[in-house]
Amino acid sequence: GAVVSQHPSRVICKSGTSVKIECRSLDFQATTMFWYRQFPKKSLMLMATSNEGSKATYEQGVEKDKFLINHASLTLSTLTVTSAHPEDSSFYICSARETVRHNEQFFGPGTRLTVL
Amino acid sequence: QKEVEQDPGPLSVPEGAIVSLNCTYSNSAFQYFMWYRQYSRKGPELLMYTYSSGNKEDGRFTAQVDKSSKYISLFIRDSQPSDSATYLCAIRGDSNYQLIWGAGTKLIIKP
Image (cartoon, rainbow over all chains, first blue to last red; front, side, top):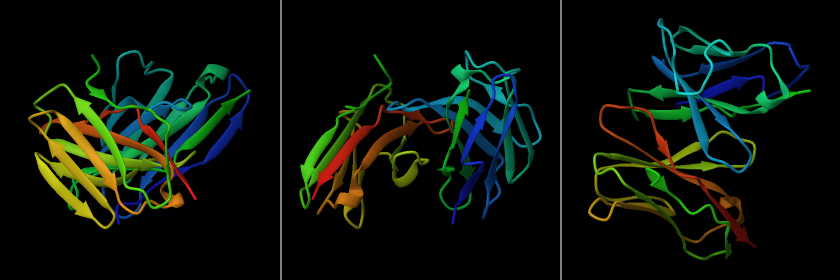
């Protein structure tokens, strides 16, 4: 139980295009999901907290117009990187908080974004 | 001072050895202590979590929390090459579900 999926697992895009990443909780409902960014050999950096049905809360220094987050249902949150640039290339990971059995965050497998 | 300190390693040990991974933290208000394992290019996997002080055991893994010293540990017995990964500690308070992360320790188990 407590499985989180992400799609796509890897994406390569041209500079200036937008990319959407989906995060789904497969066997539980998640009122809260989190989006992280991870640079090589570094720990996870929280970008934003996403609550179902309301606006996401962004961490300091994260551009909300650049990284659009939508949490439209209890099992799906999306992150859209708008007008992507090479410096946006990174490993993006989502997590969902499972509240019934563990009350902790479970992570998706991550999405590797490469912007050319 | 960072809220959570963790030696990034790498830590290299022979197969079968007992591994000790550690983190220190600064805020005594933290109550929940987690260990995640992350394989290369994968998302973190929750290994163990502990509330408040004490030990918790699950198979070859033991998590230990010493709140008086603000020190948390993960022990791996009979280590296997498949345990080679980065191990991240994470902590949080009672009411805030945001995790405070350690830097992660890269562990290498040599066959």
